[in-house]
Amino acid sequence: MKKFETISSSHWDAQYKKALEAQPLRKELPIKSLQLLHQDTLEINGKPVRMDSTAFKDLCKLVGLPIGFDKTFANTFGDKARQELVNRLKAVAASKGNSNVSIVFSPATKSILSIQKDPKEIFSNQTFLETTSRVIDKYGLEVNSFSVDNDGKIAINTSSPKNEFSIKGLPNEDHFGGVSFLNSPNGGFEVSPFLYRLVCANGMIGRSFEESMKVTSMDPISMNLFWDELSLLAQRNFKPITFDHQVRTAMNTVASVAELHDAHLSLLSYSDATLRETEAWAPYSETIDRYLKSNIDVHLFTPNQRKNAKTGTTIWELVNGITHFATHDNGFKIDDYDRRKLQVEASKLLNKKVYDTANLVASPF
Image 1 (cartoon, rainbow, N blue to C red):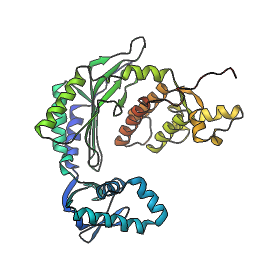
Image 2 (spheres, rainbow, N blue to C red):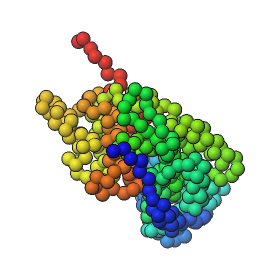
Image 3 (cartoon, rainbow, N blue to C red):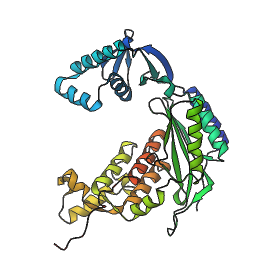
């Protein structure tokens, strides 16, 4: 039976409190006080502090070192040479007046989550929750999910039965539009369309749609723009402009072996499900077996051949497989924040500019 599922008010209150308690720690420091010891260790005023990979990327960006070049440089000259390069570039940045940076620490582990040049792009959980609550109240949205991780990342998905829309000529494709809110130490305050598919209570976060936005400041001009963008989205019941076209195309296009493999790998990466257990949502092993029965070993394909190899699964079936796995309790261990990542992955697949097999044609030869 179709059912629009929302969280209870008590769950909202509990998560709201947890989000405030999990506020990441932030400190403004002169860039000259930082010294890279290793890719995962930063020395601050003589004290070594653990650093996440995203924070290391932030540091490279701040000193003007492209991540792609960094990997090549490290592979060629080693970690110590890379360490010296980053520290020299940091010194140059400090000499040019780029004096202060904002360091964001995990409230749980005290490791560095993010290093930002402009602290105004980092929002407190309090500000984020107050703004999100205003949007929910203004547009009569209901909360489908609310998750908080130990590092203070918050993800809230909302929609409303009043924002229902269907796709003409397609049964069982009733969707409800809404908004997905994210606040994280490295990504900041992000807002995206959220699509709730009633037939199986699947949720998809449309960060790949054009309507996604990032809040970079709470100043009047930025906030007026924020509310104007939300108003335009609300006028369409929070339905992305290209949604109908993308769904129809996805329904009529079979996924390639490469696309199916990527989806299957995502399910495995974000959960403790085994290879065979994920088959119900992304039948990769079953597809490989079908090829083997025809004496074709997919494992011998080149990357481009995998993109040109058809499967028996459409893009739309694969998208819904990913979102169903991410949205429901299927007995596997999966973090709430990783569920969100899978919902975003599903959106990226749906909104892919050209599906791998889209341009394959029949031939008389």
